[in-house]
Length: 122
Image (cartoon, rainbow, N blue to C red; front, side):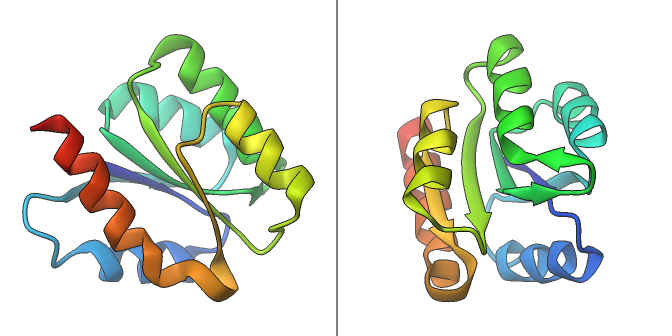
């Protein structure tokens, strides 16, 4: 299962890559830090799942969600954020995110969310 990582902080992209590297059948197919790079990379690599930060350089994850979902509605999004307000949650879920996690308290839920997405494929 291909996963694309989107976060504006390179060390967080590395941390996410390390978190999921031992999940059997999962491969990181790319990463990005800006909305434009994320949209282009996701549409180019066709991942099953995207780990998407809310706050990005020059924009937000909602932009990425809307652009990608319009062209590739099958892509599953897991939004991770330090901005875990109800307003942010609703904006992301309304734009097509499947999951919305607070980085500070729900980081450990990423693996189970990926497993759930993988289970729906088989």
